Amino acid sequence: MKIKVYGREGCAKCTKLKEKIEKVVRKNEIKDTEVEKVNDLEELVEKGIMSTPAVSRDGEIVIKGEVPSSDEILEFLE
Image 1 (cartoon, rainbow, N blue to C red):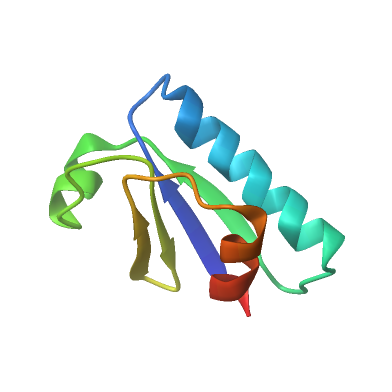
Image 2 (image 1 turned 60 degrees about the vertical axis):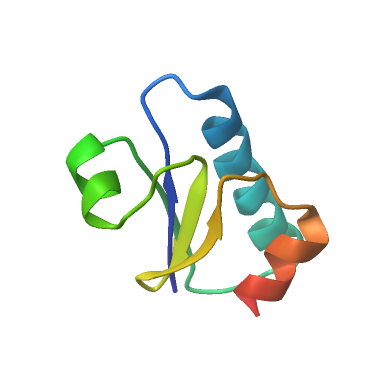
């Protein structure tokens, strides 16, 4: 599974969210999961992301403009 966290360069919430997702992946031993942070403004615009952070799972946007709880993260990872 490929998880992308979208946000502007220097976005503290976006960085925190990426770390939170990685922690949930480790804690729940979710195999074959890659977490990547995307700072490219063109890619954000291409995906229609107007508020960050945003998260995609295998190309599908699952979160926009919020930092979800660990339980919410686990839900979209399963």
